[in-house]
Each structure stands twice: as C-alpha cells, then as structure tokens.
Length: 206
Image (tube, rainbow, N blue to C red):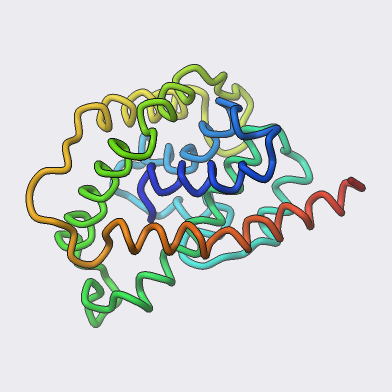
C-alpha cells in the first residue's frame, strides 16, 4: 500500500482541479481513512481489500462508482481517491521494482518499508505534511460509515498525525522508492482518479 503522504499528495494534486475539495478537511481525512482497518485488524489484512472496495491490489473503478452512488460527501470522495491510488500503486511497484518482490509474491518488507517510510518522512517535511495533517485533525469524522467506525477513523488519524510529527528522514537514502519514483507516480495516477470522478458526475447528471 502507499503510505499516508503519498495518498495525501495524490489527493491534493487531484483536488487542484476541483477547488470544492482542495481545502476540505473531510476530503483529506477520507484520503487516509481506508487504512483505519488496521485499528481493528492490526497486521491481519484479510479484510483490507473489502474495506478498499476491491481496489487494494488492482484498480476496480466500477467499485468506487458504486460506493459513490450512495456516499458522496467530501469524506467519501477522498475515500474513493485513496482506494484508486492504492489500486495503481501496488501493481506499479510490482512491475517496476521487482527487486523488492520475492518469487512467491510477498514483498521484502525491510526494503519496501525502509524506502517508503524514509520517503514519506521527506514528503511530510518538504511538501506540507504538517498542514495536511492539521486539516485531518480538524475534520469531522463520519459516525455512520458503512465499513469503519467513528472510533477507528478517529484513532487512525490521531495516531498517524503523532507518528508523522515525530518522523525524521534519517539513515540511508531510499534505493528503490524515493522522491523521484513518487513524483512520477503522483503524475501518472491522476488520469484514473479524474476519469472515475467524471464518470460519477455523469451518473448524477452534472
């Protein structure tokens, strides 16, 4: 999965074309919220794909459209942006960075998280992470989400805000998934986000 700063920057970049979301705290809370399943399940990922609307490992925009038919608040739009981002992130690194994938399909967690945690710390420091998490902490979390509880969403955002505030990009530079890799991904992932949203607008007659 992409880590929170990748999700937040993908969401912010997309929202630059949709100013109704650009400064919405709830939109950015939605953009990190599918991973709140870890509050419930911790390292058990058996429910993660369902909470990600079948987009955790590969993109299924039709599932996001189905979700948006019944849930289309700024939080929900951010939620859909998150899962569509993950749906593109996972097959991309498996294709472009085979050095971190074992022959049986598992990822080398030391290499993967060594790179992604450092890179996310750099992004937090250099790309407005403090302000983005500040908005997330001010957002009103939904109390009636169909997949996650208010407490799970609240614990997740508070825990991640504290974690990222304390992170430092120390140690060895990223080898495989560094800033350049993320910047290319952020550009390339936008087309699917936008096309899916435009399809949603057509469905609702806008």
